[in-house]
Amino acid sequence: MFLRQVLTIAAKDLRSELRTREAVNASLAFMLTILVLFSFAFDPGNSDISIPAIAGGLLWIAYSFAAALALNRSFARELQNDCLDALLASPISASALFFGKALANFTLLLAMEILSLGVFSLLYDVKIRTQIWALLLVIVLGTWAMAVIGTLFSALTVNLRLRELMLPVMLYPFLIVPLTAAITLTSDLLNGIPLGGENVLWLKVLTGFDVIFTSLAVLLIDTVLVG
Amino acid sequence: MRERIKYLLLIISAGLLFWSLYKIGYVLPLEAINVGAYQILYLHVPSFFSAFTGFFLGLIASGMYLKTGNFKYDSFAAGVNEVALMFATAGLASGMIWARYAWGVWWAWDHRLTSMLVCWLVYVGYLILRRSVEEPTQRAQLSAVLSIIGCINVAFVYKSIEWYRNLHPSPVLSFRGGGGMGPGMEEPLMLNWLALVCLGIVIAMVRMEEGEMSREIDALRRQAHSY
Image (cartoon, each protein chain N blue to C red):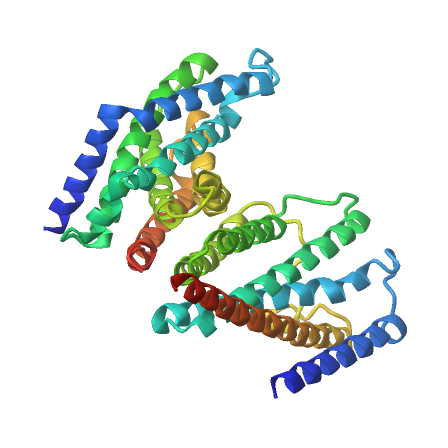
Protein backbone atom coordinates (compact mmCIF):
# COMPACT_ATOMS: atom_id res chain seq x y z
CA MET A 1 0.00 0.00 0.00
CA PHE A 2 2.72 2.40 1.09
CA LEU A 3 4.87 1.30 -1.82
CA ARG A 4 2.04 1.93 -4.27
CA GLN A 5 1.54 5.44 -2.92
CA VAL A 6 5.26 6.12 -3.22
CA LEU A 7 5.31 4.86 -6.79
CA THR A 8 2.22 6.89 -7.70
CA ILE A 9 3.83 10.11 -6.48
CA ALA A 10 7.13 9.27 -8.18
CA ALA A 11 5.34 8.45 -11.45
CA LYS A 12 3.37 11.68 -11.24
CA ASP A 13 6.52 13.73 -10.71
CA LEU A 14 8.41 12.00 -13.49
CA ARG A 15 5.50 12.35 -15.90
CA SER A 16 5.08 16.05 -15.27
CA GLU A 17 8.84 16.51 -15.52
CA LEU A 18 9.07 14.65 -18.82
CA ARG A 19 6.19 16.69 -20.24
CA THR A 20 7.55 20.11 -19.29
CA ARG A 21 11.27 19.24 -18.96
CA GLU A 22 11.71 22.41 -16.95
CA ALA A 23 14.22 21.04 -14.44
CA VAL A 24 15.94 18.43 -16.60
CA ASN A 25 16.85 20.70 -19.49
CA ALA A 26 18.29 23.41 -17.27
CA SER A 27 20.18 21.04 -14.98
CA LEU A 28 21.63 18.94 -17.74
CA ALA A 29 22.80 21.99 -19.67
CA PHE A 30 24.25 23.40 -16.46
CA MET A 31 26.06 20.14 -15.67
CA LEU A 32 27.64 20.06 -19.14
CA THR A 33 28.60 23.73 -18.91
CA ILE A 34 30.42 23.12 -15.65
CA LEU A 35 32.26 20.18 -17.18
CA VAL A 36 33.39 22.44 -20.02
CA LEU A 37 34.34 25.23 -17.60
CA PHE A 38 36.68 22.86 -15.76
CA SER A 39 38.87 22.73 -18.86
CA PHE A 40 39.69 26.39 -18.23
CA ALA A 41 40.53 25.85 -14.56
CA PHE A 42 43.46 23.66 -15.60
CA ASP A 43 45.03 22.65 -18.87
CA PRO A 44 43.68 19.20 -19.81
CA GLY A 45 46.46 18.77 -22.37
CA ASN A 46 49.18 19.23 -19.77
CA SER A 47 50.67 15.82 -19.05
CA ASP A 48 51.75 16.90 -15.53
CA ILE A 49 48.11 16.93 -14.47
CA SER A 50 46.65 13.50 -13.85
CA ILE A 51 42.98 13.89 -14.72
CA PRO A 52 41.83 10.55 -13.25
CA ALA A 53 43.25 11.68 -9.90
CA ILE A 54 40.96 14.71 -9.75
CA ALA A 55 38.14 13.30 -11.89
CA GLY A 56 36.07 12.30 -8.85
CA GLY A 57 36.07 15.83 -7.51
CA LEU A 58 35.25 17.37 -10.88
CA LEU A 59 32.36 14.99 -11.54
CA TRP A 60 30.73 15.27 -8.14
CA ILE A 61 31.02 19.03 -8.00
CA ALA A 62 29.23 19.21 -11.34
CA TYR A 63 26.64 16.67 -10.11
CA SER A 64 25.94 18.47 -6.86
CA PHE A 65 25.65 21.90 -8.49
CA ALA A 66 23.18 20.62 -11.04
CA ALA A 67 21.32 18.69 -8.34
CA ALA A 68 20.62 21.87 -6.37
CA LEU A 69 19.08 23.35 -9.47
CA ALA A 70 16.79 20.37 -10.04
CA LEU A 71 15.91 19.89 -6.36
CA ASN A 72 14.79 23.48 -6.02
CA ARG A 73 11.88 22.67 -8.31
CA SER A 74 10.84 19.49 -6.54
CA PHE A 75 8.41 21.00 -4.05
CA ALA A 76 8.26 24.48 -5.55
CA ARG A 77 6.44 23.13 -8.59
CA GLU A 78 3.56 22.07 -6.32
CA LEU A 79 2.93 25.62 -5.16
CA GLN A 80 1.03 26.57 -8.31
CA ASN A 81 -2.73 26.09 -7.92
CA ASP A 82 -2.13 25.00 -4.28
CA CYS A 83 -1.12 21.50 -5.37
CA LEU A 84 0.96 21.03 -2.23
CA ASP A 85 -2.06 21.57 0.02
CA ALA A 86 -4.04 19.12 -2.09
CA LEU A 87 -1.27 16.53 -1.86
CA LEU A 88 -1.08 16.93 1.90
CA ALA A 89 -4.86 16.68 2.20
CA SER A 90 -4.95 13.51 0.08
CA PRO A 91 -5.07 10.19 1.98
CA ILE A 92 -1.34 9.47 1.82
CA SER A 93 1.18 9.99 4.58
CA ALA A 94 3.78 12.73 4.41
CA SER A 95 6.52 10.11 4.34
CA ALA A 96 4.98 8.46 1.25
CA LEU A 97 4.91 11.87 -0.41
CA PHE A 98 8.51 12.44 0.60
CA PHE A 99 9.68 9.04 -0.63
CA GLY A 100 7.86 9.46 -3.92
CA LYS A 101 9.48 12.82 -4.51
CA ALA A 102 12.90 11.55 -3.44
CA LEU A 103 12.55 8.58 -5.80
CA ALA A 104 11.60 10.84 -8.72
CA ASN A 105 14.52 13.18 -8.00
CA PHE A 106 16.84 10.21 -7.65
CA THR A 107 15.79 8.81 -11.04
CA LEU A 108 16.18 12.14 -12.80
CA LEU A 109 19.55 12.91 -11.25
CA LEU A 110 20.83 9.41 -11.95
CA ALA A 111 19.89 9.64 -15.62
CA MET A 112 21.57 13.03 -15.98
CA GLU A 113 24.66 11.86 -14.13
CA ILE A 114 25.16 8.75 -16.23
CA LEU A 115 24.78 10.82 -19.37
CA SER A 116 27.33 13.38 -18.24
CA LEU A 117 29.67 10.64 -17.06
CA GLY A 118 29.80 9.49 -20.70
CA VAL A 119 30.38 13.04 -21.92
CA PHE A 120 33.05 13.55 -19.28
CA SER A 121 34.91 10.40 -20.32
CA LEU A 122 34.79 11.53 -23.96
CA LEU A 123 35.96 15.07 -23.30
CA TYR A 124 38.72 14.31 -20.82
CA ASP A 125 39.78 10.90 -22.12
CA VAL A 126 39.06 9.06 -18.87
CA LYS A 127 38.53 5.31 -19.05
CA ILE A 128 35.32 4.38 -17.27
CA ARG A 129 34.68 0.90 -18.61
CA THR A 130 37.10 -1.11 -16.48
CA GLN A 131 35.27 -0.43 -13.19
CA ILE A 132 31.88 0.49 -14.56
CA TRP A 133 29.73 -1.59 -12.14
CA ALA A 134 31.51 -0.40 -9.04
CA LEU A 135 31.32 3.14 -10.40
CA LEU A 136 27.57 2.81 -10.93
CA LEU A 137 27.17 1.52 -7.37
CA VAL A 138 29.00 4.59 -6.02
CA ILE A 139 26.92 6.90 -8.19
CA VAL A 140 23.69 5.24 -7.03
CA LEU A 141 24.64 5.55 -3.34
CA GLY A 142 25.89 9.11 -3.68
CA THR A 143 22.86 10.18 -5.67
CA TRP A 144 20.49 8.68 -3.14
CA ALA A 145 22.21 10.75 -0.43
CA MET A 146 21.81 13.89 -2.56
CA ALA A 147 18.18 13.04 -3.37
CA VAL A 148 17.18 12.39 0.26
CA ILE A 149 18.92 15.42 1.76
CA GLY A 150 17.90 17.58 -1.19
CA THR A 151 14.24 16.57 -1.07
CA LEU A 152 14.14 17.18 2.68
CA PHE A 153 15.62 20.65 2.23
CA SER A 154 13.38 21.30 -0.75
CA ALA A 155 10.41 20.66 1.54
CA LEU A 156 11.99 22.74 4.29
CA THR A 157 12.56 25.79 2.10
CA VAL A 158 9.42 25.59 -0.04
CA ASN A 159 7.57 28.36 1.77
CA LEU A 160 10.52 30.65 2.33
CA ARG A 161 11.21 33.91 0.66
CA LEU A 162 14.42 33.61 -1.40
CA ARG A 163 13.84 29.86 -1.72
CA GLU A 164 16.26 29.47 -4.63
CA LEU A 165 19.06 31.04 -2.61
CA MET A 166 18.32 29.32 0.67
CA LEU A 167 18.48 25.75 -0.62
CA PRO A 168 22.15 25.74 -1.72
CA VAL A 169 23.29 27.65 1.36
CA MET A 170 21.81 25.02 3.67
CA LEU A 171 22.24 21.98 1.43
CA TYR A 172 25.99 21.85 0.80
CA PRO A 173 27.22 21.64 4.41
CA PHE A 174 25.03 18.53 4.69
CA LEU A 175 26.39 17.01 1.50
CA ILE A 176 30.02 17.16 2.58
CA VAL A 177 30.14 13.63 4.01
CA PRO A 178 28.55 11.83 1.03
CA LEU A 179 30.51 13.98 -1.41
CA THR A 180 33.84 13.27 0.31
CA ALA A 181 33.11 9.55 0.23
CA ALA A 182 31.87 9.56 -3.36
CA ILE A 183 34.77 11.69 -4.59
CA THR A 184 37.37 9.45 -2.98
CA LEU A 185 35.73 6.29 -4.34
CA THR A 186 35.19 7.71 -7.84
CA SER A 187 38.78 8.92 -8.12
CA ASP A 188 40.02 5.50 -6.99
CA LEU A 189 37.83 3.67 -9.49
CA LEU A 190 38.79 5.94 -12.38
CA ASN A 191 42.44 5.33 -11.52
CA GLY A 192 41.79 1.63 -11.92
CA ILE A 193 41.86 0.83 -8.21
CA PRO A 194 39.02 -1.65 -7.52
CA LEU A 195 36.76 -1.58 -4.48
CA GLY A 196 38.29 -3.38 -1.54
CA GLY A 197 40.96 -2.76 1.04
CA GLU A 198 41.12 0.83 2.26
CA ASN A 199 38.34 2.37 0.21
CA VAL A 200 35.69 -0.02 1.59
CA LEU A 201 35.65 2.33 4.58
CA TRP A 202 34.27 5.09 2.36
CA LEU A 203 31.66 2.74 0.93
CA LYS A 204 30.56 2.06 4.49
CA VAL A 205 30.48 5.80 5.29
CA LEU A 206 28.34 6.42 2.22
CA THR A 207 25.94 3.57 3.00
CA GLY A 208 25.74 4.57 6.66
CA PHE A 209 24.98 8.15 5.75
CA ASP A 210 22.23 7.03 3.36
CA VAL A 211 20.61 4.82 6.00
CA ILE A 212 20.81 7.33 8.86
CA PHE A 213 19.64 10.36 6.93
CA THR A 214 16.85 8.44 5.18
CA SER A 215 15.50 7.41 8.58
CA LEU A 216 15.92 10.93 9.98
CA ALA A 217 14.06 12.38 7.01
CA VAL A 218 11.19 9.95 7.52
CA LEU A 219 11.03 10.85 11.21
CA LEU A 220 11.05 14.60 10.66
CA ILE A 221 9.17 15.05 7.39
CA ASP A 222 5.77 15.23 9.13
CA THR A 223 6.96 18.23 11.14
CA VAL A 224 8.36 19.90 8.05
CA LEU A 225 5.38 19.43 5.76
CA VAL A 226 2.33 19.18 7.99
CA GLY A 227 3.51 20.96 11.15
CA MET B 1 14.83 37.24 40.04
CA ARG B 2 15.91 36.76 36.45
CA GLU B 3 17.85 40.02 36.50
CA ARG B 4 19.67 38.97 39.65
CA ILE B 5 20.65 35.62 38.16
CA LYS B 6 22.02 37.40 35.13
CA TYR B 7 24.15 39.80 37.17
CA LEU B 8 25.33 37.00 39.45
CA LEU B 9 26.43 34.89 36.46
CA LEU B 10 28.17 37.90 34.92
CA ILE B 11 30.10 38.54 38.13
CA ILE B 12 31.09 34.86 38.40
CA SER B 13 32.18 34.84 34.78
CA ALA B 14 34.21 38.04 35.08
CA GLY B 15 35.83 36.86 38.31
CA LEU B 16 36.83 33.52 36.85
CA LEU B 17 38.17 35.12 33.67
CA PHE B 18 40.31 37.59 35.61
CA TRP B 19 41.59 34.93 37.95
CA SER B 20 42.61 32.59 35.15
CA LEU B 21 44.09 35.52 33.25
CA TYR B 22 46.29 36.21 36.27
CA LYS B 23 47.23 32.53 36.48
CA ILE B 24 48.09 32.38 32.79
CA GLY B 25 50.02 35.61 32.78
CA TYR B 26 52.01 35.39 36.00
CA VAL B 27 51.96 31.90 37.48
CA LEU B 28 52.24 29.39 34.64
CA PRO B 29 55.56 28.97 32.81
CA LEU B 30 56.07 30.34 29.32
CA GLU B 31 56.51 28.13 26.35
CA ALA B 32 60.14 27.50 25.42
CA ILE B 33 60.00 28.22 21.69
CA ASN B 34 56.90 30.18 20.71
CA VAL B 35 56.91 32.56 23.64
CA GLY B 36 53.43 33.85 24.24
CA ALA B 37 51.70 32.03 21.42
CA TYR B 38 50.44 29.04 23.33
CA GLN B 39 48.48 31.12 25.85
CA ILE B 40 45.79 31.51 23.23
CA LEU B 41 44.97 27.90 24.02
CA TYR B 42 43.21 29.10 27.17
CA LEU B 43 40.73 30.96 25.03
CA HIS B 44 40.71 28.60 22.05
CA VAL B 45 39.83 25.33 23.78
CA PRO B 46 37.20 26.73 26.19
CA SER B 47 35.57 28.56 23.27
CA PHE B 48 35.02 25.30 21.45
CA PHE B 49 33.92 23.49 24.59
CA SER B 50 31.36 26.25 25.19
CA ALA B 51 30.29 26.13 21.55
CA PHE B 52 29.68 22.39 21.74
CA THR B 53 27.88 22.79 25.06
CA GLY B 54 25.65 25.33 23.33
CA PHE B 55 24.99 23.25 20.23
CA PHE B 56 24.16 20.27 22.43
CA LEU B 57 21.74 22.34 24.55
CA GLY B 58 20.25 23.62 21.30
CA LEU B 59 19.71 20.04 20.12
CA ILE B 60 17.93 19.12 23.36
CA ALA B 61 15.82 22.29 23.32
CA SER B 62 14.84 21.67 19.70
CA GLY B 63 13.78 18.13 20.51
CA MET B 64 11.79 19.42 23.49
CA TYR B 65 10.11 21.99 21.29
CA LEU B 66 9.03 19.36 18.76
CA LYS B 67 7.71 17.24 21.62
CA THR B 68 5.83 19.89 23.57
CA GLY B 69 5.26 22.76 21.14
CA ASN B 70 6.19 25.23 23.84
CA PHE B 71 7.71 28.38 22.33
CA LYS B 72 10.00 28.84 25.33
CA TYR B 73 12.14 25.96 24.07
CA ASP B 74 12.28 27.53 20.63
CA SER B 75 13.54 30.83 22.02
CA PHE B 76 16.03 28.96 24.16
CA ALA B 77 17.30 26.92 21.20
CA ALA B 78 17.66 30.04 19.09
CA GLY B 79 19.52 31.84 21.87
CA VAL B 80 21.99 29.08 22.70
CA ASN B 81 22.68 28.20 19.06
CA GLU B 82 23.44 31.83 18.32
CA VAL B 83 25.74 32.17 21.31
CA ALA B 84 27.41 28.86 20.46
CA LEU B 85 28.04 30.08 16.94
CA MET B 86 29.68 33.17 18.42
CA PHE B 87 31.96 30.98 20.53
CA ALA B 88 32.74 28.81 17.52
CA THR B 89 33.74 31.93 15.61
CA ALA B 90 35.97 33.03 18.49
CA GLY B 91 37.51 29.57 18.60
CA LEU B 92 38.17 29.52 14.88
CA ALA B 93 39.64 33.02 14.93
CA SER B 94 41.92 32.31 17.89
CA GLY B 95 42.98 29.02 16.31
CA MET B 96 43.88 30.80 13.10
CA ILE B 97 46.03 33.30 14.96
CA TRP B 98 47.82 30.47 16.74
CA ALA B 99 48.27 28.57 13.47
CA ARG B 100 49.95 31.61 11.93
CA TYR B 101 52.60 31.45 14.68
CA ALA B 102 52.93 27.70 15.03
CA TRP B 103 52.40 26.40 11.51
CA GLY B 104 53.21 29.55 9.52
CA VAL B 105 49.85 29.55 7.75
CA TRP B 106 46.46 30.91 8.74
CA TRP B 107 44.61 27.78 7.78
CA ALA B 108 45.32 24.11 7.14
CA TRP B 109 42.84 21.56 5.88
CA ASP B 110 43.23 19.31 8.86
CA HIS B 111 40.20 17.27 9.92
CA ARG B 112 39.41 19.22 13.06
CA LEU B 113 39.64 22.56 11.29
CA THR B 114 37.60 21.35 8.35
CA SER B 115 34.86 19.79 10.42
CA MET B 116 34.66 22.85 12.64
CA LEU B 117 34.28 25.03 9.57
CA VAL B 118 31.50 22.78 8.30
CA CYS B 119 29.83 22.95 11.72
CA TRP B 120 30.09 26.73 11.56
CA LEU B 121 28.47 26.76 8.10
CA VAL B 122 25.62 24.51 9.28
CA TYR B 123 24.73 26.89 12.10
CA VAL B 124 25.13 29.97 9.92
CA GLY B 125 22.49 28.27 7.75
CA TYR B 126 20.37 27.82 10.88
CA LEU B 127 20.48 31.53 11.66
CA ILE B 128 19.73 32.47 8.04
CA LEU B 129 16.76 30.10 8.09
CA ARG B 130 15.40 31.73 11.25
CA ARG B 131 15.67 35.15 9.67
CA SER B 132 13.83 34.15 6.53
CA VAL B 133 10.69 32.56 8.02
CA GLU B 134 8.16 35.05 9.31
CA GLU B 135 5.44 32.84 10.72
CA PRO B 136 6.52 31.96 14.30
CA THR B 137 5.19 28.37 14.43
CA GLN B 138 6.71 27.50 11.10
CA ARG B 139 9.98 29.16 12.03
CA ALA B 140 10.15 27.20 15.26
CA GLN B 141 9.41 23.87 13.58
CA LEU B 142 11.74 24.27 10.62
CA SER B 143 14.62 25.52 12.73
CA ALA B 144 14.13 22.71 15.25
CA VAL B 145 14.38 20.18 12.41
CA LEU B 146 17.50 21.89 11.07
CA SER B 147 19.08 22.01 14.51
CA ILE B 148 18.55 18.26 14.99
CA ILE B 149 19.85 17.12 11.62
CA GLY B 150 22.62 19.72 11.83
CA CYS B 151 23.93 18.25 15.07
CA ILE B 152 23.89 14.72 13.66
CA ASN B 153 25.56 15.92 10.48
CA VAL B 154 28.34 17.59 12.47
CA ALA B 155 29.03 14.33 14.31
CA PHE B 156 29.14 12.53 10.97
CA VAL B 157 31.45 15.11 9.41
CA TYR B 158 33.78 14.95 12.38
CA LYS B 159 34.10 11.18 12.23
CA SER B 160 34.50 10.95 8.48
CA ILE B 161 37.02 13.74 8.05
CA GLU B 162 39.03 12.21 10.88
CA TRP B 163 40.06 9.47 8.48
CA TYR B 164 41.78 12.08 6.38
CA ARG B 165 45.16 13.49 7.32
CA ASN B 166 45.58 14.72 10.84
CA LEU B 167 47.66 17.80 11.63
CA HIS B 168 46.02 19.35 14.66
CA PRO B 169 47.68 18.70 18.05
CA SER B 170 46.09 15.68 19.67
CA PRO B 171 43.90 16.21 22.71
CA VAL B 172 45.98 16.30 25.85
CA LEU B 173 43.31 16.77 28.49
CA SER B 174 43.11 14.03 31.09
CA PHE B 175 39.42 13.19 30.59
CA ARG B 176 40.10 12.42 26.93
CA GLY B 177 42.91 10.04 27.80
CA GLY B 178 45.66 12.57 27.22
CA GLY B 179 47.35 13.66 30.40
CA GLY B 180 50.06 15.51 28.49
CA MET B 181 49.53 18.94 30.03
CA GLY B 182 51.86 20.43 32.57
CA PRO B 183 50.85 20.75 36.24
CA GLY B 184 48.33 23.48 36.93
CA MET B 185 47.65 24.10 33.25
CA GLU B 186 44.37 22.29 33.03
CA GLU B 187 42.79 24.31 35.82
CA PRO B 188 42.63 27.72 34.07
CA LEU B 189 41.39 25.95 30.97
CA MET B 190 38.44 24.43 32.78
CA LEU B 191 37.75 27.61 34.71
CA ASN B 192 37.71 29.57 31.48
CA TRP B 193 35.24 27.07 30.08
CA LEU B 194 33.01 27.59 33.09
CA ALA B 195 33.40 31.37 32.75
CA LEU B 196 32.49 31.31 29.07
CA VAL B 197 29.51 29.04 29.70
CA CYS B 198 28.27 31.48 32.38
CA LEU B 199 28.74 34.37 29.97
CA GLY B 200 26.97 32.38 27.25
CA ILE B 201 24.02 31.66 29.51
CA VAL B 202 23.63 35.37 30.25
CA ILE B 203 23.66 36.28 26.57
CA ALA B 204 21.29 33.42 25.74
CA MET B 205 18.93 34.61 28.48
CA VAL B 206 18.92 38.12 27.02
CA ARG B 207 18.26 36.68 23.56
CA MET B 208 15.45 34.54 24.95
CA GLU B 209 13.72 37.54 26.51
CA GLU B 210 14.14 39.39 23.26
CA GLY B 211 12.55 36.46 21.40
CA GLU B 212 9.61 36.38 23.80
CA MET B 213 9.11 40.12 23.45
CA SER B 214 9.23 40.08 19.69
CA ARG B 215 6.68 37.27 19.65
CA GLU B 216 4.42 39.33 21.89
CA ILE B 217 4.77 42.35 19.60
CA ASP B 218 4.06 40.13 16.62
CA ALA B 219 0.90 38.76 18.24
CA LEU B 220 -0.29 42.27 19.10
CA ARG B 221 0.34 43.42 15.54
CA ARG B 222 -1.65 40.50 14.16
CA GLN B 223 -4.45 41.29 16.55
CA ALA B 224 -4.45 44.92 15.44
CA HIS B 225 -4.59 43.86 11.81
CA SER B 226 -7.47 41.49 12.37
CA TYR B 227 -9.79 44.26 13.49
